[in-house]
Amino acid sequence: MRDAPARYHVPGQTVPRAWIVTLGNEVLLGEVENTNAGWLARRLTSLGVRVRRMVTSPDDEESAEVFRDAVGRVELVVSTGGLGPTYDDRTMYLLSRALGLPLERNPAAEEMVRRRVAERGFQLTPARLKMADMPRGAEPLENRVGTAPGAILRHEGTTFVVLPGVPAEMTQMFEEAAARLAGMWRGPPCRREATFQGIVEADLADALMELSMDESVYVKTQPRGQPGRPGVRILVISFEGRCDEAFARLLQAARAAGGSALE
Image (cartoon, rainbow, N blue to C red; front, top):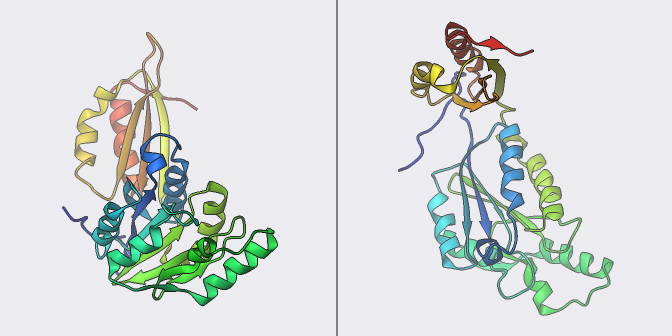
């Protein structure tokens, strides 16, 4: 099922949607913990992007299928992993396959690789030069921590941001990409939260059911009590600025059930 377009209440402005794609057999084997996806989800949310999917896929054609499936469905795809010099670093190749674009040596990326290899005292091997191969039309992102460049690639309404898997390299490079893509961001969503004593989640069931029909609002409740002293934390997030209305409805239900707000 394709994601329905989500809109602000300001006419003409859309909420960008994103997929986060992690490539790496080592992640699927449980050898490496995927901290990148969580960091990216928080960062994208803070920029006003609605993350619709987080995918971890192997270093093979399955990842190409993920990239291909994203075109036209979301405005942004951020991938991590698979940019190094080894045989299983295939992200650029898989992206080029997915989009039907030739994989070619990018002169700007090659200059970045040559400079970083020299600065770090490494030997310039064909395997390292491979890190400059990108789909045609890609804009290289310099790696100021490691060696492998990333890229930004716009294709049929979807922007791909291709980042390395090493967390320190990924975060630095994402911020550079975010600066280049400043026109996409809408600012952070509104957020309201409170904790009530004297009620349980079931006391809010009717209000939660009512609010679940509004796709512009995310509502989450969590138990926050102790034995004999029930409590509930209420969280409301909206990319369309509708926090106050939904939050007021939940506060009304909580107080009607006998809950008292914690300061």
